[in-house]
Image 1 (cartoon, rainbow over the protein chains, first blue to last red):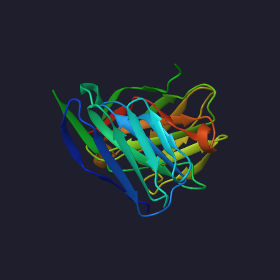
Image 2: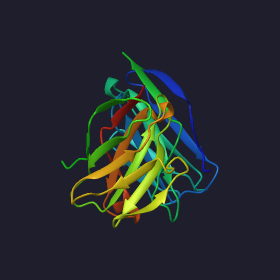
Image 3: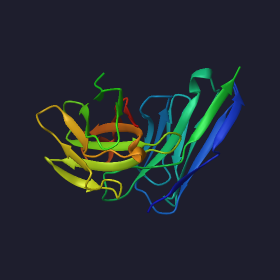
Image 4: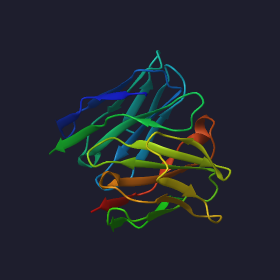
Length: 111
Length: 116
């Protein structure tokens, strides 16, 4: 099956630092999505990417759809305590409506 | 803001018992999904549902699982005879369509199922 690997697995950063995480796939996706999950909650959509090479921002978040369509990255600038959580990438193929989720990156922000 | 709602938030059941997890998708959405997340692991697709039938399902979604849209608002997941390994968070999601920007899935808060 399709596998999405995220790195790093976890990060400990100081408030105000920038964060970068990425997601790589063994196969091509036509849509890349980034979700954030707080403990005990459902995933919340942060950014959606639809075209190879696309760079999209949402406030302090920036994400890019890789040219090969097999990877994506997410950057968070000037991190704040509420950025704490698990970030999941998710991909969708050409015909399937299902999402394949990545392994997640756990972000901890210290003051 | 419209949201997907799930009930109950936590369900404890004995092994072998049947459970029904309930979801109310966003009202104008047409596609409905169930995902599950075993504690500490990634979110896994179970099934998608459109026009009153299953459109896609994963290997996890075996004969023990079924889905139904019993009326115009609810979407349910039934597990006929629960096993210990069914313990997980179950997330319902819905989307307006399948093409690009309308296909984005919005997730509910989840139901934590504990099988004892």
